[in-house]
Image (cartoon, rainbow, N blue to C red; front, side, top):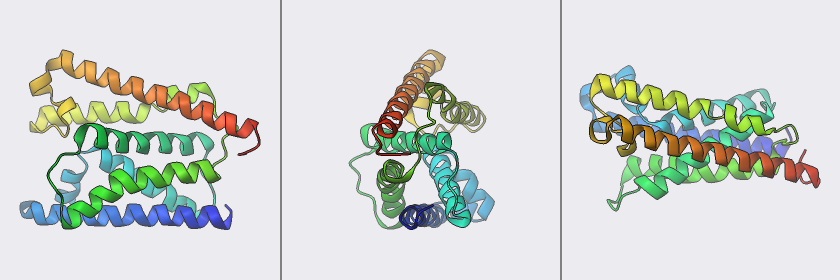
Length: 207
């Protein structure tokens, strides 16, 4: 890693660590009955946002620790997933109710700052030449695993983290339709990223 890519990756890792800490502390305030670490983590990890941003933190933390980049496919996948996190939040989930304190901070970092910083880092520093169209299909594994997890957990607990996964209101047909829409969006987004990456590499703007 170059000094610039290392410094930028360190910033992203710090953003993710700060967001996780703020989210943990906020949940501790909201759910005092679950005031043990495992209980708070169980509540936090209902959401795709938490899973995906935690993965960002681990990936960029690893790169900072080792000063080595992970594989091109992984780097592009991380960008795709975090862009979807930000887009879905701002297009479908953001409400008019103002947030405050730690809730505001974690929400801002998770849904706005990270979804901007990671693509900027990828465009500036990530190697892209080896990306292939089949990567777009492989990158569906992460959202697909989460969808299965969220539905199974919802069936067990009665809590669905997002309205588009609420089986009790949508029924199996409605749920399947939403899942199909999201998987198609992830796939198309992946194809766009592959085309962009290969195009930048072809004209000499990336490795």
